[in-house]
Amino acid sequence: MADDCFRHPRLAAIYDPLDADRSDLDAYLRMTEEFGARRVLDIGCGTGVFALLLADRGVDVVGIDPAQASVDVARAKPGSERVRWICGDATALPPLQVDLVTMTANVAQDIADPDTWHQTLQGAFEALRPGGHLVFETRDPARRAWEEWTREHSHRVTEIPGVGSVESWVQLLEVSRPLVTFRWTYVFAADGQVLTSDSTLRFREREEIEADLITHGYAVQDVRDAPDRPGREFVFLARRP
Image 1: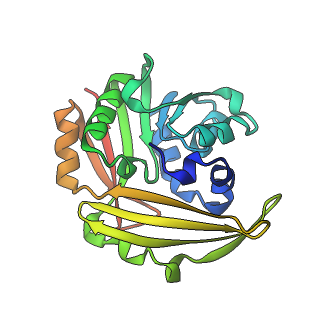
Image 2: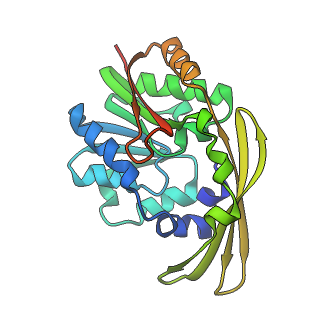
Image 3: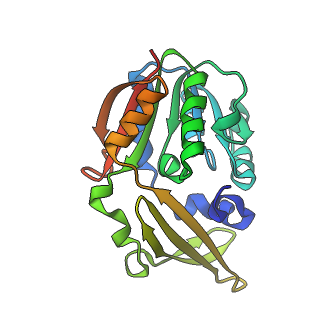
């Protein structure tokens, strides 16, 4: 089940302007070029930002996400006809043979259920051609990122064209390692509506992730530092032999 910030139509519609800086995707674009990938499966594509960046570069893209509202936002964007959009998850993919599978931003950690995580890794493996790559990022638990998930660190008011002012902040709800639960609150000035979205992320250790990848047949090719969050995240590069 997707979080409300992705599946509620009003929240999905403002997701992009609230997260306008997507420089985190630059590293994924570079890796797409590094691997010469011409066919990409973007798991957890959300509102389609990365999928459309790839399509702009002539890449054949499949974007899949369980949140219908987010997929609807993606489909409404200019150029969206160049991407194959699927509302669903990687546990039940159609037959594919892609060069690269990506899970950007929080996608890997948002798959908190262990069974679903393993099914996702298996689904991605089966979608890859031999020699294809899986790339995703996850926060280093040792850095305790959740300690900054407070109203004090996150509160802001964003002016969104056609929507008006939206006030937002995050509040930490529970830390029960490896699970961390938090709540985003959104206040729409236009009509005073208040919406909340609860999320739970799983903070996996590097060794656990490497073991999971090997279990599903991947060769762990590299574990890199995230350029946009140096020292705070791991970027995993795994290959289907």
